[in-house]
Amino acid sequence: MPLKIHIETYGCAMNEYESDRTRRLFQEQYGYEWSGVPEEADLVLFNTCSVRDKADQKALSSIGRLRAAKIMRPGMVVAVGGCMAQSMGGELQKRAPYVDLVFGTHQWSRLPELVEQVREKRERLLETDFYGWKSYRFLPYRESTDSHPVSEFVTVQNGCDKFCTFCLVPFTRGREVSRPPEEILEEIRNLARNGVKEVVLLGQNVNAYGRDRSGLISFPELLDRAGAVEGVARLRFITSHPAEMNPELIDRMADNEAICEHLHLPLQSGSDRILTRMNRQHTLEDYRGTVKFLRNRIPALHLTTDIIVGSPSETEDDFKATLDAVGEFEFNDSFSFCFSPRPRTKAAEWKDEFVPPETALERLFRIQELQTELAVRRAGSYLGSTVEVLVEGAAKRGEGLFTGRTRSNLTVNFSSGSRKPEGLVQVRITEAMSHTLRGEHLEVGYVG
Ligand code: SF4
View (cartoon, rainbow, N blue to C red):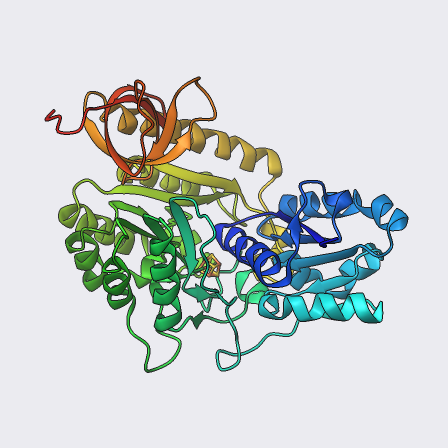
């Protein structure tokens, strides 16, 4: 009987990518079958996140739920990887003695070998070493004819050198490592041959691609080569750092037709004092200049951001500066959170300056209220217009509706008569909510 694998994924797009490629590797190369029920699997893998304390707690409670199954079926291998595993290491094994393997973010490509070792020797393993760029190995991508969704992530870079004072990533993922361009392009070509129309390039600090060593191509050059792959209709990239935005990159975004009019550019705070304490390496004025340049070159740009409220020592005036900045830049969407102290980071040491949780929550509520207003207004501007939608399949809600995304990354649910739409279609927008549009699929050749 074939062995069964189950993977639970928490956190960011990079984790989703690593889980997806790992599942494919175990299924295609090692003959595993997918199990939708963790208790019935022979290998249960938790790919964890550590961005906030809540993420740690969520993963720990899911891991805890597997304890009884592991007692009943001791042959089952329980493996925990990702950022929380990297940061907790041996402590995780102490807290959850039924976990067989704790592996770090640099061990993904060694996973089949580590699982085998656990299985054969019946021993518990802890593997959390970091490698430098010379020996870091990205997850291998194998030529495959397996079915893919229309949109796929492709990792181009791992780790971060920025050391923002609130962030654990440099400790959990290590220093920046760029993936060789030949590997990236080979993966994209293979995906395009298998019907993928949209590629999202991933990196913690994606627009710093190529800076970690000499001899690599620049990020704008990588975008050009990726956008030129036959079959790739849309190209996106996340997450960019404001200090790494430059005119060459923005020109490339404006001139290369494959690159979507969408940019996620974390602002985090509108107060220069807080930005300095966060070690963000730019001021509000720098950010303003970048947005101005972006909007001049790409008028239809859909700009989204991340905001942290209640950072240590944040005053009401600092917060108001953030509120003003969100209003000024009129973000299409923002992901806002209360500050969460992470072990080993500098900001976690500033306990005396922590903002009371109720104040942080109240600020979060105010920023989210403003963002909803902005999102509704921005989405409303689509009413009556015709947009290009990349069809993803049947909509989860609304009987008979299909769903897809605009180039600006908004979800559109639409009717399509008796036709089953696929690929890129034209949709006329009839209704606009803050995060979703509704519309109707137009006949081919329609001129609106
Ligand atoms: S740039 Fe992003 S990933 Fe890097 S330390 Fe700052 S917040 Fe973390």
